[in-house]
Length: 193
Image 1 (cartoon, rainbow, N blue to C red):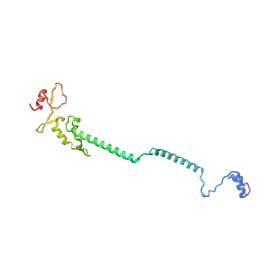
Image 2: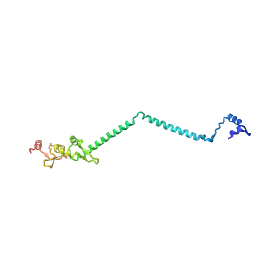
Image 3: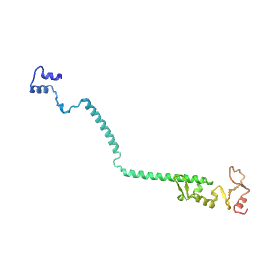
Image 4: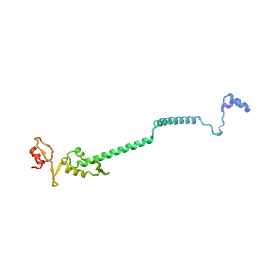
């Protein structure tokens, strides 16, 4: 409060003398009884906080501008459509795998060949992986297109191995018995033997 000593000195002064002294020394006075005073440290802290908030708002505004003109309902509908499509593909893949696994258990010659005869629309796969509607088709194929299977059925319900033709070249790991010649194989297949 040394700055007031310059105004008062060692004597009492009037209000006009005080006002002129304050004015000449360029001193600013304020009534702080209303709580209007804030320390410089608090003011600087609030200014920094305000700068941080403004920077954060600017970043968020920039991010929101990327979504300007985007129809969120359309995006949601497209997402649901894509999800439904992927679920349909997944279901078809599960169905295909279940059918192929079941077919491989039927002792078939060629998976790709037999699948050409299967009506996949009538085949149903349960949540537990059970396959319905395939067994009937396989039995029909076993009777009508026995060549698709490694084991053929004879008329009496017993199975016989598929016969092979001897060509002079060894056949490793082939089922069935050897037939002497092509002529014998044709005769046997036509029922002449």
